[in-house]
Length: 378
Image 1 (spheres, rainbow, N blue to C red):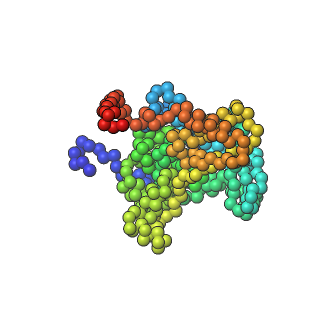
Image 2: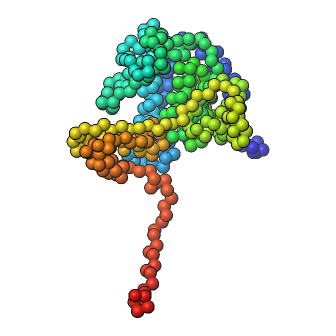
Image 3: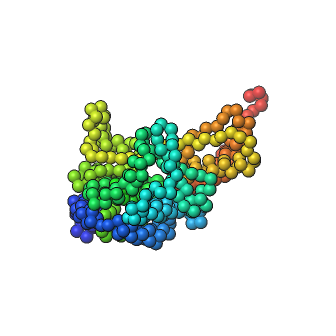
């Protein structure tokens, strides 16, 4: 650390930061659902106001030139995702406030393994327009009854007065909406105040996130910190942090939970994690894309091939929900035609790679090989 008194360290005072969150939590315990919902609407307004700067900054991080078609990815997976989530959250709070069944208009069906499936997408008319033909379900754990499901929907906001401490969120570095979404989930679903420690990749967005969360920060509910692994380690081990949530790699998870080096191996073998507090993690996945065989038209082949290419290439594939495996029937007569359309879609899609690699400069002509003497080398 610099000893120059004119230099201000960017390392936060962790004790003071967590003390602010502890005080904010006590105040929040007395905050009715109506005011919590109004607070969400304030965050929606600050998100909308910061959206343009958010997207510009995300494009600068990824070195996208102005006007790039890939800018649309930053809108959809950035501020748009947060705004739609806030809309759903405040809808839930409104129903809890009025005593209405949160799942009153939800489609609930039986799923394999003694589970229930709740249709969550499309959520509203915008979803139906943007994602026509697609739907998504949330499946319960085995044995959960519909009565239990309806009685618990709303999670932490069913007992808003309950104090549950502070969560450290170790933010993702790939999709810019994930850190804010994780913060909102911890605050509303888990009913915990939150300190968001950004991945260094997204540090340029720190001021944007601070603008978005100002209504929450002003009330001592959210803090945002930037720094390296040492800061994350100090926050995770601090007694003022009740739980940890992270989105990232399995390597990072193991470093937080078990430590590093030989001591981590010994801790794993003994089943004694270094982190002695609850930890939840989202570490990605290997999502399959299943193509059902059938009599497809040429337009169908092209349209669905472009869908597969979009899923695979979104954010250059750096996305935990990006399709990683393509499953097709070996007996499908149009299999080769579909793969040809997919290769074409992948080849013609906008790419980040040429802009992220250094320019090698003009190529020098290769010298001509020496002429051989036909008499000596027949």
